Image 1: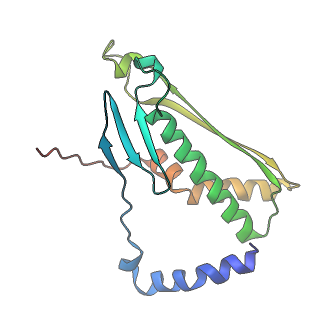
Image 2: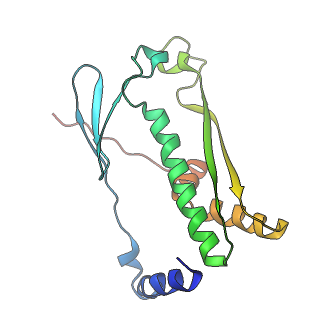
Length: 167
């Protein structure tokens, strides 16, 4: 897709959202079904993924780990955002890799230590790009990818999460 094609594709949406801001507010949804043993089947829209315990918490490693899925969502969002930004500003990226790593202290999630937090202590996101870029282009890609990546911004800023349990 060219920069012009992307702009033509998004222009009517941007105009609509400027004129009718309430139309831009969309609720994305995810759903899971409690599975056998200690698992949850998550509908991804393209496939059914069965999540379970990570081996560090007693899992077999045969089921997806939700922590891995969070990092995968970050990589997916960052990759799509990077491509969209590069296209919009006319920068050619031949290929590359995006990697996310996160540090977890499993003592927290297993309740072994109250001092050990539950959740990621740190996440590192890296981009290895096959592209001939000036320093300014690379800085623009970095700044705009971080600014417009939904998952990145959600993790960095944090959002309130409301829970409800119904029987």
